[in-house]
Every structure is written in C-alpha cells, then in structure tokens.
Length: 179
Image (cartoon, rainbow, N blue to C red):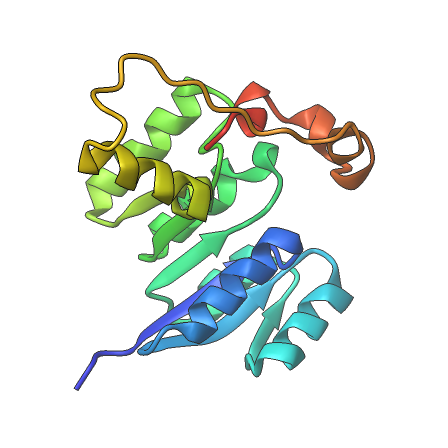
C-alpha cells in the first residue's frame, strides 16, 4: 500500500489554489491544513477542499499539525521566515519562486535544508507548461538541430505588477523573469 503524506499550504490566493488542486489530485496526499493571514480566505479554502485545519498564523499551524510537507505560496518578500520555520518543524518545503530576495537568505535556507536532510524545492511551474514541454521535445528529438541560442519571453500586462499584485513593489526582478 502507498504511504500517505500530510501536507499544508501557506497562502491560498491564486497560486495557492493551484497547489491545493494539485495536492487534491495526487493519490496518497492528505491535505490537512491551510494557512492564510486572511481568515475568510483560509476558511473558504478549507471548506471548499475538505481540509480540517485552517490557520491565520503559520507558526501555530506548524506547531499544531504533523506535516510531512508544506507549500509556501505567499509574496516573495515573505518567503524566508516560514521556510525556515517549516524546515525547523521537520517538513519538506515546496516554495514559489523566487526562493528569496537575497543570496544570503537563499543560502541560509538551502543550508538549513541540508542540515535537516529535508527537501527544499522551488516551483518553476513554467517548465511544465505545454509550450515549454513541446520546445524541449523538439530539441531532444533533433527536429530543430543543435540549439546555439534561445530567446523566450513571458509577457505580463502592466495590470499584473501595478494592480493585481498588491505586493509587487516589495519583490525583486527574479519574480518577473521566466521560470
């Protein structure tokens, strides 16, 4: 029989909803908790997904749940502390990009993962989108010959950083690079 793992999602906004849907679709994964500073969002996500635990404080969630893994799906500038807390609590971490806003923070997060023997993975979701997959297949098959240069572009309208993401001014360039 397949071993079940217990996971939680910190941040249930647009991207967090994708993490919830992905976990729900996986056999052997128990979604046991969600956390969001917006209590109504946490309550709604928990109810919609049949998740028993809902929190507004990730520290309380990490202390109150036995978790094998945590998705951290919150604004970029907030990644460091919950990542370190989840690793200290013994949970593997799937973190939205970018990993951190500074090299020292990223290095410290990676060192903590190495020290604890836990996995820390950054979700480069565009690698799994159909156009990226098709391009890789064409290259691997030799259909396009040996690449010597590549150019890829991901466009967002001005709406995304100025209206959609209220925290965009607190992030760094890596958020806007294709990942």
